[in-house]
Amino acid sequence: MPYCPLGRALLTGVITKDSRFEKTDRRATLPMFTPEALEHNMEIVKLVKKWARRKNVTPAQFVLVWMLSEKPWIAPIPGTTNTEHLDDFLGAADVRMSTDELKEFEKDYEKIYLVGHRADPFTESQIDK
Image (cartoon, rainbow, N blue to C red; front, side, top):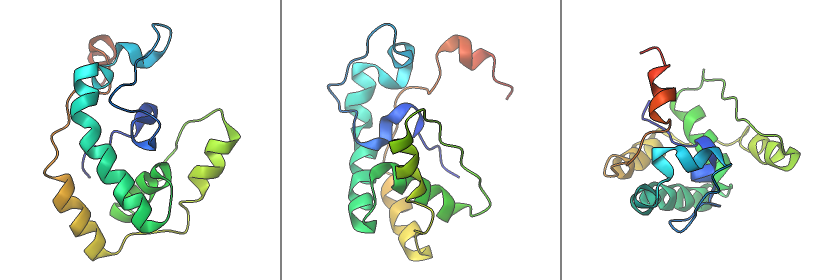
């Protein structure tokens, strides 16, 4: 399955290329949230928004739909402390992409080069590879 940068709200549609984060926000230290990376990575956000509209779901729901359509045995565990976000995630439960839709999405996704890692260097060093 391709790298899916849902983490930390990147693909939910609330982060833009102009988003900046306070030092107390974990995203302030992550390479994928630098101004340069955000500018570049908006292509995946645009693609997710396009497909979310097409499937009549929110961007957060679409990412879950994408994951579950790609690998139905996956048990995604989206993190949230907000019940409204949880309700939004649950809206993806009954939506799937067809094989043809997956191929079409992947064709566009493959053209996107993502910039910046999901973790800072220290965290990255702690991950078993």
